[in-house]
Amino acid sequence: MEIKIVIVGVEPQKEYVLRTDGPISFVDAMEQLGLSFYRPCGGIGRCLSCAIKFAYGMPQMTSDDERALDFSDMRAGWRLGCKCVITRDCKIEVPASLASEITSVIADELSEDEDLNKRDIGIAVDIGTTTLATAVIDVHTGKILRQRNCTNTQLKFGSDVMTRVKAAIDGHGEELKNCVRDDLTKLGKEILGEDFMMNKIVFSGNTIMTHLLLGLTVDGLAKYPFVPHTLDSVSFVEKGRNIFFMPGISAFVGGDIVSGLYYLKMKAIDKKRENEKFLLVDLGTNAEIVYFDGQTYFCTSASAGPALEGASLSCGVASVRGAINHLSINNGKCSFTTIGGEAPIGLCGSGVIDLVHELHRNKLIDDGGLLISKYAEEGYPVTENIIMTGEDIQQVLLAKSAICSAIELLIKEAGASIDDIEHLYVSGGLGASIGIWAASGIRIFPPELINKFEAVGNSSLHGDIEYIIHGDTEMLEDIRANAKVVILNDNPEFERLFIENLKL
Image 1 (tube, rainbow, N blue to C red):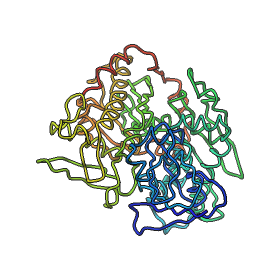
Image 2 (image 1 turned 90 degrees about the vertical axis):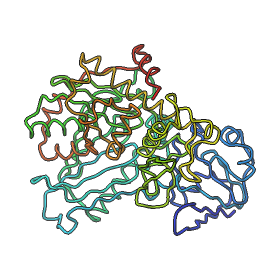
Image 3 (image 1 turned 60 degrees about the vertical axis):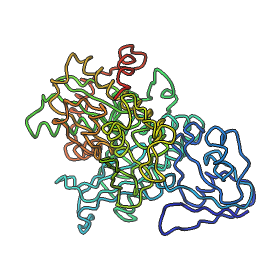
Image 4 (image 1 turned 120 degrees about the vertical axis):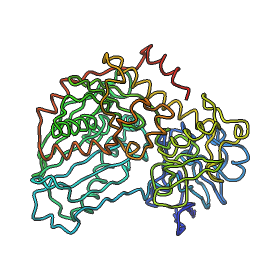
């Protein structure tokens, strides 16, 4: 049996060929070819957004296909990729938006001409759900010598942490651990060479990512009340390397947030503003939010869903080359930019936020997010092939309502008001590219905080770097000791705010 696979929208176009004897799933075929396939729900058939097209040799339609696709599309050869089993010779066209994770390696090269062998070096690692971010540091000067990001290959198990918890419980724990270890080993060899050495490695990540990398049980994180195996820092020596994992605060406010707070604390000490009242929002599928009133860190996590990261939307893609990252609508014309200046393949998070804001500003959607009659049935066309549907807009409203409702409730629980906040820090990949006017325009953030906004990029990685330099364990424990977790689940006030904030 001969299987041909083409990634549509990637130039130059290349045809991959796999020969196999028996039936094989499309996902396994991609993996055997060394290709990744982006499945937001991890292949359980929940998101219905990973459709592929058979030029010939299409398999029989299944109930999964019928749930995800129109009959006319199925007749044209479209099938749901995560559920597809190949039984005969075929040629498959895979949209670039589903295969873009293959090439989404971001390199920010610094001081590449310097000889690392003559230095005492440390490595900072942020274990993100989507991306692994690393930085090589001179431990004496704090100078960043190398920096690399790569895709977390755990993505094949799903784009959110709960699908990975399920995969671990189903017996894939060792594979999940090895995904990240192999990714990091590959990065280490790329940055430092085959026989790379370092004195110190500091890891941070959300509680589930940390548990999976350490090989700890995640059974307690599968359902309420979400009990982690441990929230303490973990440190040990392996092959002469001092390894340290940042501690967490709760099941959904993990070491990445503690590391970010450590970074902000060090930054505040430098500026002699230790008691500055700030709001930290780390944007992602789970938006972690912290309000610091000068003494206590009020923390919560809002389940925003994957819409603001491009996943789960018919027009959405990850932040990869060709993703529309910013746009505007003026005089009926839509103008946009893409990552890398390449042909558009879809909208990433910042582009999604811009588009919803522009649709509302131009009165193409009402306060409830409903498109005007001209676009109500087919959706709004950004390009001929990139269309935002009414369902997409509603997904964005659900995400933005979760975030802004959590912010309002957290501030209220702290006995504070919007006016008390002196600084709004927004972290994460989306935080680095988000348009603050658009985000506040659709009320992800209170408009009163526009002039207090500062994007801090990967605050988790920044905190790792600071810890490599200063190693202030007492400060980490002080952050944890003064943290108060605010639970949103089953909170009637949160439910009330959530419904109120569904409007633009």
